[in-house]
Image (cartoon, rainbow, N blue to C red; front, top):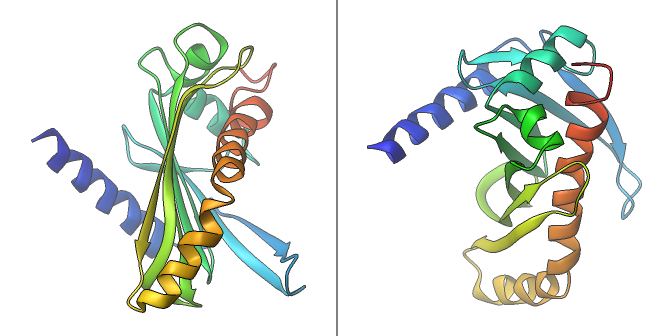
Length: 190
């Protein structure tokens, strides 16, 4: 029953992400890809889960406070080559948990598309950790995910990704912690 509610919430959040106006509460950033030098645009949305509201903590101090005081929020980042969903959860409240001994449960789901703009084949992973402002993260976990039809291509990607697993986990957890530290729970925003 709980998983059904989680799935319902996920689809509701995804539909908010995909179908609401791109101009409202969106942080679009242009990123230069190091491998090919092309400019890619990311759409980033912050969704507060209790009221299913899309917020803009980068531009609104009140939205950052609302997310920091909530017990759960999600961040979606989408571009033509990948999609990412990060979930932040703390029964004490996000900033209270982050600043104290409770911690914040952080989960990141990332998919990289095999063919640009085609989400039917992808690889990625699920990263989980408990994050804190003052101490190191703990309970770090990672599960790779592969949905690739070509077995040879899947094997090549698996081998390549296996060599980067520690860096992937470290980068995902660091990014999650930085969002809380520099934007949501930034000192002075409480």
